[in-house]
Length: 61
Image 1 (cartoon, rainbow, N blue to C red):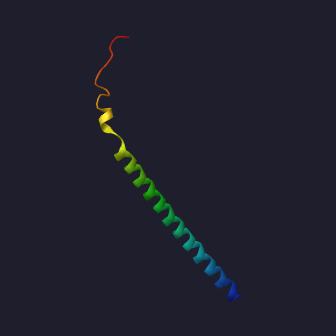
Image 2 (image 1 turned 60 degrees about the vertical axis):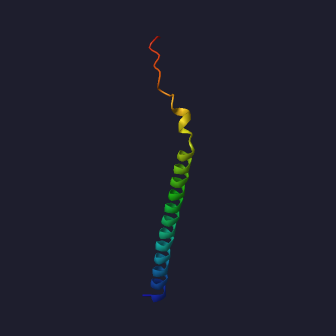
């Protein structure tokens, strides 16, 4: 059995595992950034402009 090919396969598997962990971390960072941006956007919406919405109902059709 060729021990060099076993070692190379082991290194390759560990590299794939590291790549997967890095990809997962980057995805989590992107999700956190998106969540923060969404919350900031919701905070900037002018709620005072929406106070009259739904106050009147038109029952004549």
